[in-house]
Image (cartoon, rainbow, N blue to C red):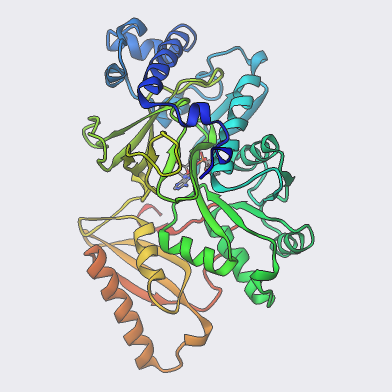
Length: 436
Ligand code: DLL
């Protein structure tokens, strides 16, 4: 890959030694600022008897307290801001499902930096100023649409701010405006692919070349399905509103892990139970510290996302560490009969089975002392069986396949085609009846 396909080679390809020095200096400056300006951090540091000057090296990071969503809730709405509100030019919030949302703010400099970070991941995915980018994330408090929007404009691509939903119109626009890049959640990409199929459109007649999908976990199997059905290169990108939104990490064309913007965020992997930092390559919870944000710096934020970090050199030339596709959030992990299961693992198994559709729903319930999992699936219409015996054999086979890969017995139920709700934003795969 030529360096012209790297948006900011000076930072993205920085030798690691230099990068670490750069991170340390920015970390120290950030710690000083939060200690001075954010009471929550000052109290946490004081409770541990730490002052910012105690951090001499990057390994001292592990002495610092973690920040959790609970801290953000307790300081709702503006308590974690490190600048006065008059310096804030944008406010977003996270798509929280329970209680108050978490509120995040950006200064002018933060927005400039954010746009550049997104420009990096878009360039890494292959987007250039010649592209027409259709943004099918919902515009609003969610960071996805605005993040990718400003990143595209920074590159000089033409942006179509379609927002989410309105799928028939999405496809009309895609055809008429000749969109070359699609930006949405992977589950919405599947919804659009279904509709393209249904309308009898040959995807090769579309101008789409690349998709930037993120905002939720998705399997390699789903990637292959989307690539084949839309005839595009599908790339993954990761982020969270508490840290900045999209732009935290994104894949290059080698699709072998998402490069984290380490000049802006320091990544650690911890054991979510003991909170100990794990050695490079271990699987655990991603913890991120922002080191260049002004309005809303985050120190050791526990993302709850489970992944691992690969520090080996990528063929693309970037030196920035790569995070593996996340298997899911530790709080989305199901524990079925003692086995830890992520919805994305079930997705991987289902999509490897001929005839299974990428639409599924997991229903968790408690029978006596045990948690039980029902996997509801749809199958392609051409294999929708009239014969009960064939149907039972198919469901048995799917159940056995899940059991052999994940080591957990589940009930598999076939539901009517199109009966599982389709997604415009983030997919809701799990219905947890234990909490009802
Ligand atoms: O989802 C930011 C984003 C928007 C990223 C668009 C990428 C593209 P939140 O709504 O705060 O922010 O949700 C953050 O979504 O902690 C993960 O659990 C999950 N998530 C985001 N991207 C991915 C991904 C945005 N590529 C939460 N793979 C995060 C897996 C993802 N999970």
